[in-house]
Length: 412
Ligand SMILES: Cc1cc2nc3c(=O)[nH]c(=O)nc-3n(C[C@H](O)[C@H](O)[C@H](O)COP(=O)(O)OP(=O)(O)OC[C@H]3O[C@@H](n4cnc5c(N)ncnc54)[C@H](O)[C@@H]3O)c2cc1C
Image (tube, rainbow, N blue to C red):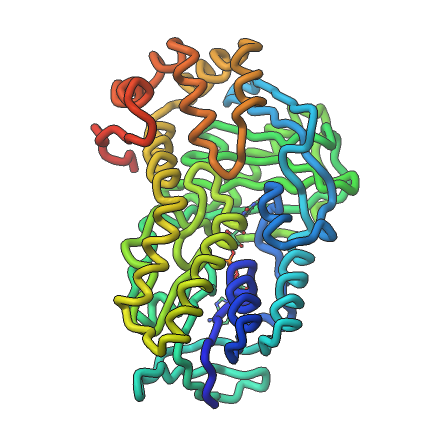
């Protein structure tokens, strides 16, 4: 079979590309290895208004969140709350189904229980790929353009020899149908013994329960071990243990910028391209936005009949122009953060407890562009800068956009 575009993966990034290209009149096939789009869920489902705008729907929203409480390793905390919603907890499977439905309505063919296996050869400038269909049958398909939207372990990236992200943080999450806690506030847990390298989270699910998880930069210790420690922490905090989780999720979060997200006849989008916010591991907004940019460049390339590397490079330039600076700053701050021990983290929480700083977080906090608020906080509070390496002070004092050269290697 011949198609214009083969999209591998019916997650938010894949369905966004598929919808746009099908809408523009291209013959688009989406393959999804699972039997149902959106299942299993591998996400906490906390998103900004931007995601709802990109999806043009609020149907998947479970509840709105107005604030956050960040806990240090000794359970000292800092809280802030805005007057209006700052984020939304969504039914993540609902988002994926909604986006796949939109792609199907635009004319894309969605094939579930169908896996991309490998690139077989290139023929007349087209990629001949091998798929495995619902009954285990082998299918060959020829595509002018292949879009790898197949998530963190992207088989498309491997098949087309595009290098993978440098770091994949193991994550472990569970859903608890009942939980104490403020239904309008997410909780973030810092500490090397709970979540080295990132954080643990407690997120209200809008139905009386919570999603609890960790993502860790671990030394080979399974994320589950850290998750159990977080549960013990939460039991102390709430004065009662959380009981009867209904679903577990084990996955990975790609962190870092890969050098190339395109090649001849191929584009990578979303987690496959590591388009994930380095400070939070969130990737729905960034993946969908980059998918839109990918669709624009892909459309032009298909219309011109030129899907060469040179033409598709415009996509790589476009998404880096929009998000690259934020990612670079966030990666830098992540490295600073990784150097902090538990005592430093406790001191950081204590320093943030001033009401002025909480007001700054409320004013500048944006879950999609978190480095803005960090920079503002550091500018406002010399005591915060004193806690952190010298280079950070230089960054704060420098002009907007510059990131200081790294003065240390990652601690591993
Ligand atoms: C524990 C955890 C919590 C998270 N919480 C949040 C959050 O609160 N907010 C946020 O913004 N982000 C969050 N993320 C990140 C977010 O889930 C991802 O960034 C997002 O799902 C990326 O979308 P995507 O479309 O690129 O990939 P995915 O959603 O991973 O979709 C890829 C699709 O490709 C399919 N696929 C894979 N290989 C193949 C193949 N060979 N053939 C066919 N199909 C294939 C998969 O089945 C999947 O459906 C979280 C991640 C984790 C692990």
